[in-house]
Length: 344
Image (cartoon, rainbow, N blue to C red; front, side):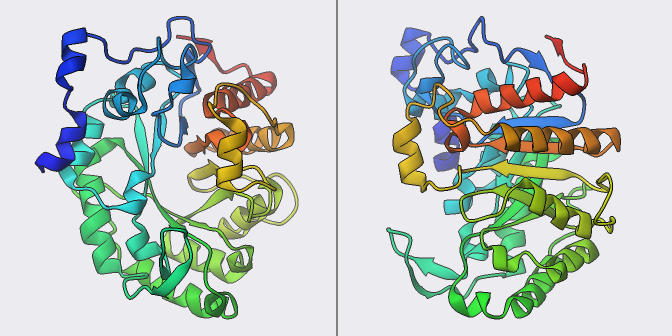
């Protein structure tokens, strides 16, 4: 417990200086998105956001420990992605410490640990080196992810994300078999925790797994499919077609979501993560704008909000160069079609 909470303790030198992260005074991000729209970034510890998110320059460690409250105070951000849980599970006290830094309307989108989502155990370079015996283990997922997240975050819990990294060939040659294993896994997760129903969501990184069978079993399990925009995956339009199948909608005509919409805008096609990091660092401007994706997501978000379904859109710096500016441009795209925003 002490180790998990220590990341939120104020270092002595910072207490003496009396200088902790604060939101940028003249930030264009001081907007109020429409109700039900939860926009956020993948983490928040980026010094390059000075003047846009932060009022000054802070070290990444300082932002990781103490930047969340300032981030959440800007208005535009009503959500954030917690990615560290993918690499190592955290306990209920650590989740509660996050929740204590934001208001009641804020939501956390949290990734399940690779301990249960990765089919293989990987080397430091990402290469699979052994079979993962805990892959799709619902008992471990419940005890080390679902329960701590739901109990620690309380009403601030957003979608619980099971992001499945690129699968080995033996899985891809039999996607139906893996889908059946996934169905059993999802059936083993709790339907309610402390009186609250978790929002479970699945993201895949292999287009071969994006099948009608997968959408059917997700519908039967009451689990949402995540539109995961990544170099390996098709664009918005094809993944919206998967959502149509999930929601039992006709393949033609306007799509009206019948459940929450979750989008993770991760990486521009044609780039690897390291290439994108080098190209876009320090993440203070848009380098490779993607107006088509932005417009398609705006249409999808409008349709969901009109149907009274919540929308989560989490942007990564590696999508266009700067996640906050990506979300700001998305809001401008939405506003162009529907005047629903007002200054804070």
